[in-house]
Image (cartoon, rainbow, N blue to C red; front, top):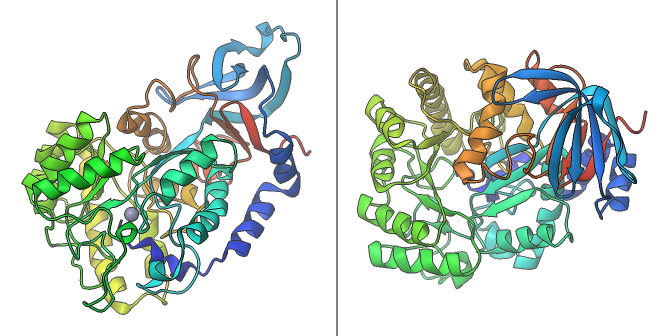
Amino acid sequence: MRTRATHGGLLHLGVNALLLAAVILGGVSAMAQEQAQAKPPTPVAVRCGWLLDVRTGKLAAGQVIVVEPPKITAIIPASAYQPAAGATLVDLSKATCLPGLMDMHTHLIDGADGEYDPARPLRRTGAQMALGAIPHAKATLLAGFTTVRDVGTFRAFVDVALRDAVDAGIVSGPHIVPAGAYVTISGGAGALTGYAPDIELPLELRYGVADGPDKVRERVREIIRHGAGVIKVLATGAVLTRHSQPGSQEFTEEELRAAVEEANKAGLRVACHAHAPAGIKAAVRAGVNSIEHGSFLDEEAMQMMKQHGTFLVPDLYDDEVILANMSYPAEYREKEKAAGERQREGVRRALQLNVKIAFGTDAAVIPHGDNGKQFNSYVKLGMSPLFAIQTATINAAELLGWSDRVGAIEPGKLADVIAVEGDPLKNVRLLENVQFVMKDGAVYKNTFAAR
Ligand SMILES: [Zn+2]
């Protein structure tokens, strides 16, 4: 993470504020509807005014998405659709439908409330963190993000518990691929710092701290055993960690390779936090699937990523949020300023080189639910709106290894569908205010129904 999510205190958004925001954005009826539709009706026909094929950018007019929850079974022209017996019709004939969005870099557990305080995770129980994350998960889903890769929490496995609660229908939230814990060196970018040296942290707060390849293997195996869906390693220092420099390498290539081998043996992929070129190159050679942030990418690093098919996950919108927040220590804002400008240059070059890019916001640094604001940051940097949407749909699905499940509206895929009024290819900012959200065939938000 660019920042420790715990320092998301700068956001000045309490849980109540987030809930209020959810009510304002979603409308009270949408919240009530969510309660009522906890059990998805079967079958469902979603009539779309236009349907975006995110692979080609083609908008097809008048299409019906036929859903047997949780999956899409067919796409039929509205003129040819014969309603099946008992089917529920969802009328989105004034809207453009597109696949549920995906954020590959969130921290749902940490942040977005309280003041800046490095010792904050020490003062909260796992239960407090888990319950505090419920509105984060809900805000993310209602913003149209139906899948997230959640890349770390300071108290291990609270993210795994959140995923399980969402999957069990206890909590409303996106599909979550949780990292379980940060795999990081002692005192590294993913380690808790800022406490006196004679304090011994409980295991949950240093679960993924490892020095040396053998220790890395052991920690990764334990993290997998406790239910992680992805492994998050930190190869370089961080912006929002005290005394940590984003330009310094942390794990060695040998340590990173140990993490990748253990993850891959268990069928998991590896996300790697890395700002500095040496750390990025070591991680790419070690076989990680994505470089998070990539602030100081150089030409060689980008060529290597292209050659290895390594994804870049650039968090760009958070730069604006961090620089605008005066409650961050000056140390962080100065590091961010240097990293942010270089990062934008790097992403421009990565676009020219066709390095694979997937959408990731580092939400917690930005308020949960504001994820869609990053589309505009991507477009300002030179992406077409279609390309920006692809980073959060088919590209993200490829990065997760979930291309058969999500990322496009196609028969056989999960019925994760969102809708907006207007054409997001003309105005990508429409995705900042998603008006309809379906996940697994269940409707969580529909402002069209209230009209
Ligand atoms: Zn992060």
